[in-house]
Amino acid sequence: MENVHLVPESENDDLYSGYDYNDPMLEELEEDPEFQRIVRTRYGQRPPLPPGGSGVPPATGLARKMTGTTMRARMGTGMAPEAGQARPMTGVTAAGFSSVMRGHKFDPLNQAAASGHSATSSLEKTEETPEMLIKRMEKKVNRLVEESAHASAMGDYQTALEKAKEAGRRERMLCKQREQASLAEQLNLDLTYCVLFNLANQYEANEQYSEALNTYLLIVKNKMFNNGSRLRVNMGNIYTAQKKYPQAIKMYRMALDQIGEVHKSVRLKILQNIGSVFVKMGQYADTITSFEHIMSEQPDFKTVMNLTLCYYAISDREKLKRCFCRMLQITSGAEDEDRYFPTMEDDPQQRLLIETIKNDRLRELERERKATADKTILTAAKLIAPVIETSFALGFDWCIEMVRSSVYVELASELEITKALTFLKLMNIPKAIETFKDCNRKDSKMAATAATNLSFILLLEKDLQQAEKFADSAVALDRYNPHALVNKGNVLYSRGDYEAAREFYQEALSVEATCSEALFNTGLVHKQMRRYGEAMECFVKLHNILRSSSQVIYHLADLSDKMGDTPQSIDWFLQLISLVPTDPHVLQRVG
Image 1: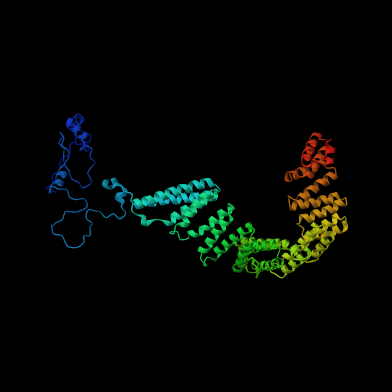
Image 2 (image 1 turned 45 degrees about the vertical axis):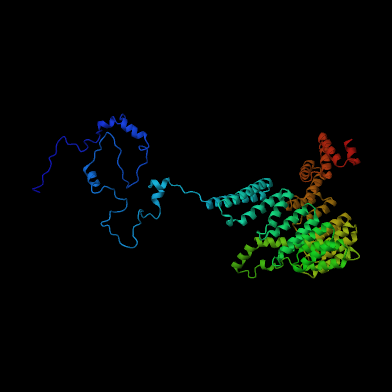
């Protein structure tokens, strides 16, 4: 410490002295002509040098002040070292690869380029290659096709057609772009097929059949499309819509010849179309040939019903019977109802499973198929029963016996009810009553229906005792049957017990709020008991349901007259005259 000499501190020594000092020469820099000339030239407007670059500063009238440190840093070589690379100690380099990439820094995430540190990389722009342009154009075409299909699904066919046309124009531009870029071998056949097929569909949806046929023809005649021949079915559908049946059959048969045996379901659907066209042409023999082939391959209710209609048209009784028996052999796939009931009541897992599948989508599909099967069988039985035997009663009996021996045994009771109703239509009341009584004696689901009909018939026959008996039986079998409740109320009304009748009518309305019979009879009860206000409310509600019912309008007019509202009564009667202009009683009331 003896050899160390400290500089004495001065009282006027300031640590920040000279901090705000400005060189007077800088104030005259804007007026320096040489400096202004350089600023206006391209040399003065050049971009800044990249890091590590070297250059000579522009000459000005002002000499730059440099510290000793800066001077020492610039000494030693006439060239600035390259950034990121140290100066080699020798001119001899080793053979092999270097661990340091020449001219690049280790930047796997390309952070320097992302942050804009490199001025050169930020100015460079990637040029779009022909492949990138084609891919972008393909995306636009696909988007237009999707928009067209969505608009068609929403029912906006005009917009769908415009989108389809635009997709076709862009697809042609895409093909030209491929040819110009010498990429014709990369032709996207799937996209071309999709665009043309969608365009033809939209033409067909807009009923522009000529344009649709021409577009389909472009696809069919192009051998590069593998499944283009199937579109002859669509062309056949268009000819069918135009009622050009020979051309339609020709197209269907050409499509059938070009579709292999592997696609069995498609071939059968084409045969169904051929049979349907033959029906419209009245050629039942050819129709039967097509439908019989389908029945031998894969029978279904739609085909067997069409076949039944053909045999009915040519009055072939034996073929009708055989066809009905074949119909009963087709299963709907919903016969196993036991799987929806638990076999072990104490198993919570099984109960949970059954509750889950009881109302799922598959169960709904089973119900739809079951309803279709029941409706087809009942319709066929009603159709063939009057013609397959000498009388319709014998025909119904034969159908009922066939149904009872099949898996659709529950339809037998409904056929018996249909038989009784047919007797009613023929005004054969004794036979109808006898048939209904047979149904009522049987322990079946249709017993309540039979009792309801019996009560109604006997009430019309003025047999109040038997009518009340069967009405009570119908209510006991099904308390929530509004028609049975109405019949019970009608029996009480006929006996003059209006209050009890009104209670049954109200109960029927609580079960089914739109039961017009119960509402009408309730109005009659109030009118009979001189409760004109309540009766008017009932008939006004019923008028909102049945706008053109002459009976409802008559009671509204009569009630308005009884309540002293003559102008309103006349208005109702005038409406009634417009419905029944030749009714003398109405004309008398208005007069």
